[in-house]
Image (cartoon, rainbow, N blue to C red):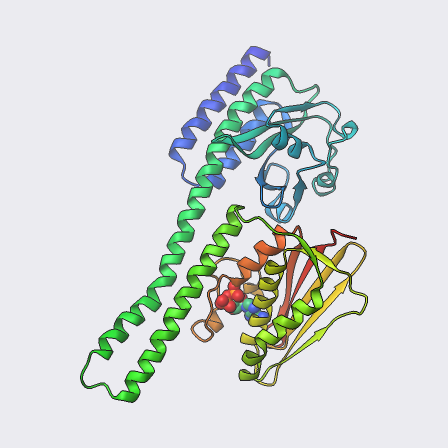
Length: 395
Ligand code: ADP
């Protein structure tokens, strides 16, 4: 096809995308249209959109023509030492003919896509002056990416930036709707309870019980509100992590002590295993404390009388690890992939154990904010084990 014809076809695709943008609500469908149009218009082998997470200075894959969801999950691209990171830092497009000769190239992705990257064209996605991600195309067929390709990709990049904003607003309104939903039950209870209290026929014992319950429900509401704020702050990247060097053992001892009463109430034994030569860690101490408390609290809550909780610290050359395992009710296999979602609760524990349903989402944010990861292994009826791996920054 001659150049002029190809360009015309490209413009037609751009017009189609603009129309899509106005009529399609689902951001994921729009992202998909954009990357396929990007690859077609520039005659490239593959295309992807990476979003930038300022809190952890990393990019992650939103969508790619040559990666499925499974492969993209957890695939992080660092700000430093990657071409996408360079585009974010410099707020400029990049055009590269031989990627593997470029010092900015991050070869890890190739292992996942199982293809070799030759040429790359990338443009920044900018919303209100803030770079939110990068649109990239790879390996132009037969030749190098041209200036005309760059111009077309920039137009698509502007569209993609709008979709990023759309997705953020979607997520925000979903979250607020879920939060309001969570408020409904305790508020309805408090409203009914105050009505009961005003009835002349209620006995002093009943009234004492109702007052106790109102107190409990209001405390739950207050915890829910602060957890919700914590989580939205963490997710927005507005929280600055205060990294300091500290000893982990006294911190874990404190957490164990703080949880001791609760453990005794539930007849659960807590033990702490700590290697003698454990190094000083560098992390945000308060956040690590919150993380440990959340995991220990869950290990007690979802345990059985006579059960136990083990807190185990370990380390290797590059990482330090914290494992919290319990001999509790466990998590059904099909629920495991959901437990880090906001407001998710395993059906069997519904209504039985009080909680905000946000603490594991908060844990996940704290861990990824430190550049680490959290994993879970569990068996229904046998117990659960959460492990966090965090990088050793100060080795
Ligand atoms: P919650 O406030 O309800 O405890 P979380 O976010 O802490 O919420 O956890 C989400 C869900 O994961 C819980 O409702 C529970 O069903 C499950 N869960 C978390 N930790 C454990 C555990 N140690 N053992 C069994 N189930 C757990």
